[in-house]
Figure (tube, rainbow, N blue to C red):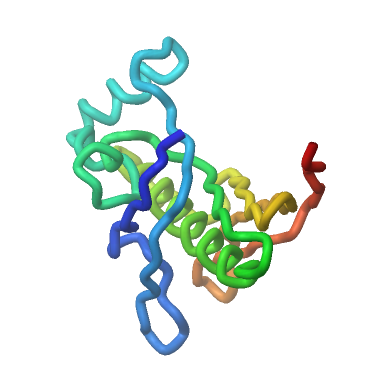
Length: 158
């Protein structure tokens, strides 16, 4: 897990219906380590495709070279629930768009919203954890981001 706020690559950020590109930063994310047997083949193939230096959806010199997934937005117990959810939704949307773009590489047909697997993320407000599943769908020929509340649970402080 990375513990440094990261700027999201503007090229993969969502755009509002009025063509405003949303900008936020991410708090926490997970990545696949390049030296594990399960992920090394993926990193090798992305390197051969010429994108080894720009795999992730951040602008950070180190983090953008990692395959990132999921996200966690953390806020204090006394507020910030809506802001955390907005930040998480933006992070997950950028991750899905980044994955779609990477999926386009070497394909004869475009990698569409229907080809993407759902992703999961969490907001943590004080001791309350809320899990969300996000996915891309196609509506009227346009790719659309969808997030659905899935599960919430509470951690008890000792």
